[in-house]
Image (cartoon, one colour):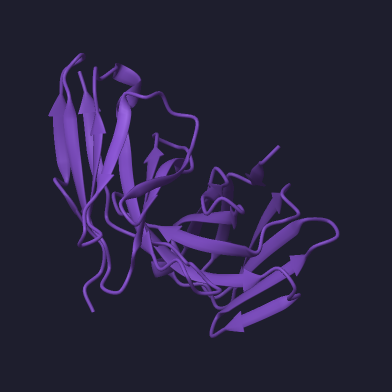
Length: 114
Length: 110
């Protein structure tokens, strides 16, 4: 069974640029959630995708957007990067449809905005 | 509102028991989770408890839930140096998102 994978592992961008982060969900999972974890903080929910549609969103501006593909993999796009976007971005996959939709996390992408 | 709180730091001796505490606010949460994060890594699911349970034991881990007080704890028996990490509790909302605490750093001294 393949776990959740994310790419790239590290990324350095400058203010105003755009970035795309990628996530492959665990085999058998149909839902992907994205979280932002600032240094020293707990993860904050960005949004969730189920059946290729956004299925819930946290308190993040529209410049944070996402996609889910038919194979359930997902992308997180951030436009007009700001210094405060520097964080660890975590992707989690789960199976929605059962009683328990436990989220399993990938290793994360460390984004640094200069 | 939704909020999860944890103490920030715990230090124990190897072989002792560790108890990490958490309080949450959303009484409609169905499941409560404990995740472990090692430096530079993602989150590893340790265990979870269904909201209608009081206790769950899984090898060295014991989870206690006091639903009346909205208090969750994780006990690690015979704590080892490999248990040194940040531990997060999280509640699941009815929208499917997880709401995390700030994390408790567990330091295990040899």
